[in-house]
Length: 247
Image 1 (spheres, rainbow, N blue to C red):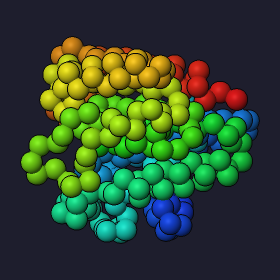
Image 2: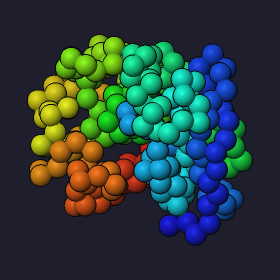
Image 3: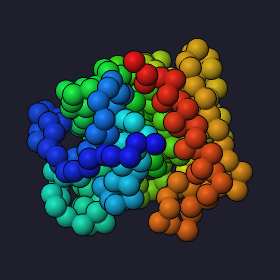
């Protein structure tokens, strides 16, 4: 673990060169390091997500989380911002890809960057991680219980939340998937279908499904938190990034 990190709010250029808010954390030591783009969950750019960003910095990575809702609700409470974006139909896929690309370029502009980028997302961010990994050239992707990659969403979900399994042939990097056996979105049959398609295409992937865990089992601020699954999941994430993001 790294003793000294710096964490702060910054401004980056996202889709169409829009200036958007982002949360950055990085180690204060010198030396080459990979970068991690953290895609926040549907509830928004909140303190729990920022804690995850700092966790990556404490483990030796420069990490940044773009605020995907900063255009619709700059400076708003995360719950209010999420509600505003949901009402507007959600984050458009092309804008998400542009924001992740901008975050990756920002990380690679920092001193000590080794040029390798990983993307990780939770909940809706898991789906968006798969989208980004199929739309950009990156080095590693981690999908934490991302739904609607394969199946149609239920009524009431944002209009932008459409299946994207058809993008699988374009997957540009190894994919780690972490899921709960008790989750309904994605349910185990959806993650099995995704794994089967990636097998068919010869795409490198590693999926793990945790018994006794449902959706959001990483969320330490929620009743859904499952310590055993989360601890093992974090170990798998850092093992995966160690293999894929080293210079």
